[in-house]
Image 1 (cartoon, rainbow, N blue to C red):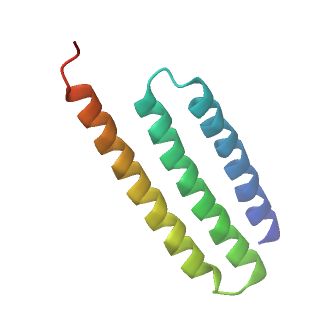
Image 2 (cartoon, one colour; image 1 turned 90 degrees about the vertical axis):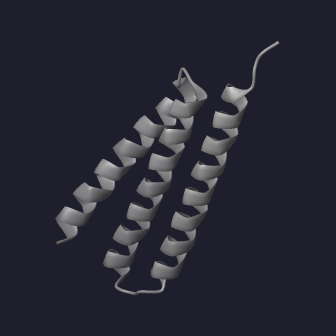
Length: 90
């Protein structure tokens, strides 16, 4: 089981690096928002792996809070961008 968790953690690290690359190079701000949202999901998955390795369930509350903050942040930024793009330029 330890090998599986190590492989999963390695895959999460690679996915996080790809998300950071997309945040840095994203051609549009919406691409950056999606990459940041995926990065939050990767952090939550990493916390889940940490909880599985350590065997305690106190990480669950942290996972819920991080998920809620990520969701609210993504929705707020998406609404801001949608409002900004709908304004007439001039």
